[in-house]
Each structure stands twice: as C-alpha cells, then as structure tokens.
Image (cartoon, rainbow over all chains, first blue to last red; front, top):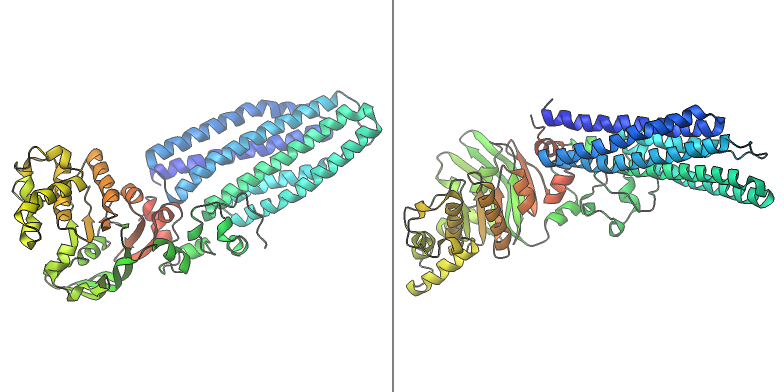
Length: 220
Length: 297
C-alpha cells in the first residue's frame, strides 16, 4: 500500500474508533437513565474528552491530507465526509453527556409513579447510530438510506413522550422536574438521531457522490 | 440498486452542483463497466456550446501499432478541454492529429473523421489548417530571432498584414500572452535571452499572432516553475473567449484549474469525458478514479 493510501486508512479507522466510542456513550447514557445506575453515566462523562480529542485529530488529519495529497474523487469525498461526520459524532457525544446528566439527576429523586418509557425511542436511535456507522464501514448507501427513513419514527416517538410529559405535569406539579428531565433526555435522543441521519447522508455522498440533504425522502 | 435519487427528486430541487451529472445507477458494478459514458445529461453538460472541432471514430496506427481506438470527442467553441492520462495513452497523438502534425511520421495512418467547423481537416490544405489550428509544444521553441520577429513570423509568412500593421499586431499578441510588460523595452533582443516561462509565453504569443481559431497545447507548463505555470494558466482562461483550447497535461491539478471539460485516455482509448468538476469529484469510470487518485497500476 502506498503511503497516502495508508493515511486515508488511518483517517477512516479514526472515524470508526470515534464512532464506536460515541455509540457506546449513547448506550451507556440510556442504561444509566433506565437502570438508574450511576457508573455508566460517569463512564459517559469520562469518555467525552476522548471523543473531543478524536474530533480535533480527525479534522487535523483531514487538513493535512488536503494540503499534501490534493485529494480528488472518492478520496476528496472521504475527506469532506470525515470532517462532517466527526463533527456529528462529537455532538452526539455531547448529547450522550446530557442524557447521562439527566440520569444522574433523576437518580437522586424518587421514581415517577407513572413511568415514562424512553426505551423504544432509545432503541430506535441507537439502531440508527449503529446502522449509520455500519453504512460507513461497508460504504453501503442502501443502509444509509434506511437510516434516513428511520428518522421520522424518532420524531413521532419524541412527540408522544412530550404529550405524556405535558399531561403529567398538568396533573401532578410535583413531577414537573423529573418529567422535564425525561423530556430533555428524549429530546437529546431525537437530536442524536438527527446526527445519525447526517452521518448517513455523508455516507451517501461518499459512496455515490450525491448530496441528498434538505430534500424530501425518496420513495423506494 | 434502485435509482432512488434520480426517480424522486427533479433536477431543479437538487442542491448539489454535480447534479446534472448524476446517472441513475452509480453502483460499483456500473462504475467498472468499460463502455464510455453515455446518456444525454452528462454529454449535454459537457457540450454547452457548438462544437468547434469534432473527432468521430478516429483510429490511428503507427505502422502495425494501433495508438488510438475509435476516439469520438467534441471540442466546444470557446472552451478549454483538457486531455489527461498516463504516458503512452495516446492523448498527445490525438492532440497532434488535430492539426495533422502526425502527417509527417512514416507509416502513420489515420481513419475516422476530424472536422473543423464541420469541414473535414484531412481534406484541407494543411498550411491553412495549421494557421487556423495552432500548436504550442512542451519545450518552448522560440526561433533564433528577436522577440519581435518571433511574433511577427507567422503574419509575414502568411502575408496576413502589411508592414505598418505589424507592430500593432505584435503588441496585441504579446499582451494577450501576458508578456508585453516584461518585453516591451527589448523587442529587438534575442528570444533566447528570455526565461523558460517567458519563452513559452512568447511561443503562445507567436501562435496567437495569426489569430488561430483553435490552440492546441502539449504539456505547455511541464518545463516551467509554478509562477510561470500560473501565468500561462491565467492566460489560457483569458484567451478562451477568442479561441477554442485543447490542452494535454500530466498535471491533473492544472486540468482541474483551467479546463471546462476533461477527457481521460488510457491505452489509446477515451475512457471518460465529462465536465471537469464531475471528473474530479465523482468520475463514473473506475479507471478514471484510479488514475486521478493515484491508485493507477
């Protein structure tokens, strides 16, 4: 393998490592919230520094490759996608921290009498995160397209949680703080889904050279 | 794979400037297909103007060696077309057949059709063809004469202007070649005293003096430093409103910078021809991708 090909591989692998770390953080944040368990929440906080470092390192590698290799075609598309994907991953890491923070806050209070179940939205969002990374690894635009269509489901689930939260706050003012924590967590999950969607769009650009952002979803 | 994108979104809603070049199926299997890219959209994109020159099914033999295989390519008026490809791919042979410089090679044989404004160049008087289709070579080749005489040469030989008109034409040509300011005080000095970059611009001025309709350039910057290269590239872009330009280059960044469309040659075949930004952002042929990303061979 030539030297520049190795460097593109290093960039690719850094994105994968970062992605794996972020997916784990999202998962740990959800576990902390659902299980009321502090240890995964602290793990999320600790990993955030590493995720931020990856973001900086990937941007720096991308800048170096642009300067030294003048990449074109799929090499150029990998660089453009890498810069955007690392930004999305970094934000997902921040949102995982936010979920972990809500989890820690909720642990200090009694459970809600009527539970708010964030498991379904968390499961869908986590699967979007994993599938967007899988699409990147496999350079598979079809998997990436599936991620785009999943996003609508997430929005609906978040809206349902919001309705439940509003209703609960109306009935039981004592629950307001805890209900809000759940709503914030659901909102963070929804935004993580949005970033997974961005990554999927980046993969489609990388594979097909086509920009599918800000358009109605294609049929089929 | 289903052509999802192409089916659903009309081109007018596409945010991406490469959209015109999107072909419905861009799967890897389609990429590796060896047939030249067809389909109305990319060709229309690469052909915004009337073709000044046109090659149709051109084959070229050096004796028993077939150097060009069935090349069909249009050169739109007032556009820069770059020809790229590895050494020996036939791009220079093709360029040189556009003003019949290959005619003098023993055993060379060409078939197919090359037209200039619709007229078959193989049937034209070769002197008048070369006046209309000029050539600039890789190494600057000024005549061992003064700067003035180099530029005036073609006009004198062709009897294109009177003696009194000559200084004006020489100045205009030197200005178009972005050399006037550097040489205006030493027009009677020998051209050989100029730097390599200046000599190459002098050769371009010499070519421009006879007002060619097409200018062919065979790696015109390969012997020049980056500053001289930038000057030549700027001047190509500046003169294209007055002539049609075809440039052979090994420097892919140069093709990316100056050319409106780019053709990739490999082993005597034209693999792909499209808008330059499409070639460098999302080429449709794997061979093109491998070459421009440096993964060739």
